[in-house]
Length: 472
Image (cartoon, rainbow, N blue to C red; front, side):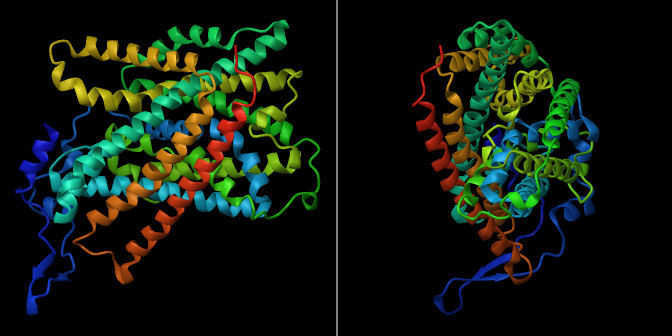
């Protein structure tokens, strides 16, 4: 239905075509003319369409609630690997490389939302998902790319669902694993990991039943509090008995690709960007220098740098892949860290699950008009059960998700947004000296590098995981 509507809208009023084709001397040439008005200016000048004013959300989120969700999406368990990433880069290189990585990830999210705002006017729609933005960009782009619109939409939907559904299973394993370690330390007895995963089914279903992002905001706030307390205790351990800076490497080039693979996949949150923007009361506030996206990612970058720097400075070559493994488990503050992070991951499950739910529900809601609420909650229950069953069947799913994440996030988070931007600007031009084109070529190279090196690191993790005995 949405695909048909986009085709129907192609004849509606929007910015004039700026690329004129003519045939002097029998050769096909293109003349690029400067755009007189943007899509937004053209639509508003005619007073016929304002997607932000016409957007109708039953439960819109405020800027602060959106910021809370963004922080929770970016401050996941990946942050615990930053000290190890700094060991792979060195102290000084790690600081600048973290800033560079954060800038690239934030810019790609910015590009996606900005292109979405342009396409709102061109398609006369009030909100779109990531996949719908890609589809609309291809359909409204030059003739040669219009046939790829369905492929682009399906690729994004498939990649997002695969990544975030797998992430839900991994989160289940992470929570169960931390409780397994705590129970073993407190009781001195071993408890089956698979049994603990099964025990999480009902709590996970309950958090998945939170109806929308508006009501999920307090849960994300609680998750941020738990993660903040856990990181605070971790920082307490990190600042104890710090050695001189001279005892640590300032720059390491041989393992720098591994740093980027860890940091990109820790920071990347491309899947939640458009759901957050679509549910905002004031979506214009998402962008800008002081917008929600810039505020959230600035804070995230600072925390990532600080934890990575202090973690590597404190433990040096002995830094573990997760900094919590360096903490003394026999001490109660270290046990509190594991408990708090487990609770934070549990509270984050709802936000990650929302991405999967939105993808599936958008595909079936037109067929479920009789009892949509009942069907929606049955769908939530079935999907959570499937994620838990997957975690029970493959408790070592983490390394496999690392491979899927390396493949999907590098393509979805870095490459697809810049491709969409190129298509959206195809007729209006790429700016002075084609700076948009050259900038996007650089980002594409970074994305390909993340794809290659991230995949290699994930394959090594898979081989390493299956060298150890399987969990019971």
